[in-house]
Image 1: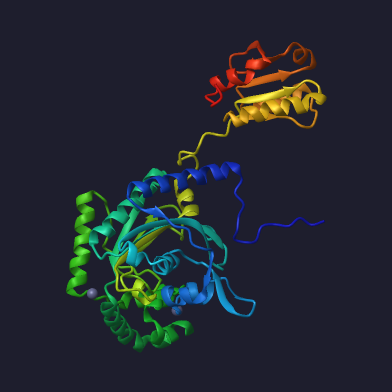
Image 2 (image 1 turned 90 degrees about the horizontal axis):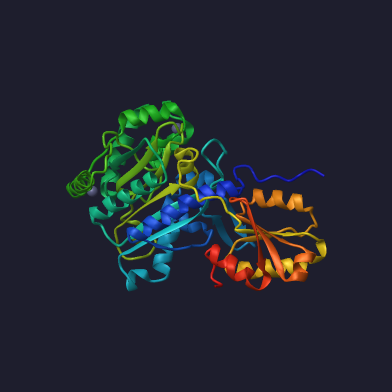
Length: 423
Ligand SMILES: [Zn+2]
Ligand SMILES: [Zn+2]
């Protein structure tokens, strides 16, 4: 029979890999708490309309990359391609704008995009993201960027640069779009078919066209205006970052390819990661809450890709948890004693002591090998003779010593040594 495989662009994580992932997730959760962000969990499936209205109908994500299907011929459903829109939906649906106002939330979980799988791009990938909803203060931007940089440093990501820009408010964006359209119009024939259409629908998309010609032409001609308010806001963000000691590069304009962004946008890029060099990115989205049916409210968020963070951190850079260790291996000298041994193992486990045993009647020698493999500190050998005498032999693998312990006090004694709870 042919063996089935995981779908293209998805991957299994084996225990050693999960240990590295857990280290990143643990750091992310710990720092979120320190910065005052609380966890939310939203569903993996959402109505397609949510992303059409937020990420934008003309974006690559919505046009080409969403896993979209019709649920029993009724609802247009997608596997979420990103986290922000869902968090804002939940914020509004559960009335946090009325009960809490300003809320700082974070999430961790899988996202899905039907992309051509390549290095650094997966169809199921995982993000850690934060959203601060209900404030236009530039200090919210500074705080979130500081948290992002802090997490990456904690996870062992070196050689990272924070790229910073402002995309302005909706008015600035309309003005910049008009100007870019005017400048590109005479060169229309040099653009790809798709970009010719983009000229009318959403001219900014020409900037992120994968066709190098379009890209070069558009970048040469990009227009980019900031009104006085947006200039002042951006100035405050830069000042705040400088005063906090967070280095950034604001010399190169860039735009994020999602429609909801306004004002501050940032990306953290890491050298040596190739084309997919952004490990985290985000920005301000001051219109999104209103565009999803809520009151006018400023907001800021970012997401970091767990896969990319781990790639950027390299091997061993993240402080992985120590490998799981069994405290006690209970070796059974004769298979009929398996039941007796299991009862002892179970009592140890209930005391919080990691305990293992064999159920397949392996030889004592093989059981000792397993104990070694499991990094057990002690091997307790239960045999018929000992059982008749009401005792059990305990070998300390590290010290190389051996003792006989009365069965009555075995659990209590081992529990004390292994910092369990039953003594
Ligand atoms: Zn503006
Ligand atoms: Zn193009």
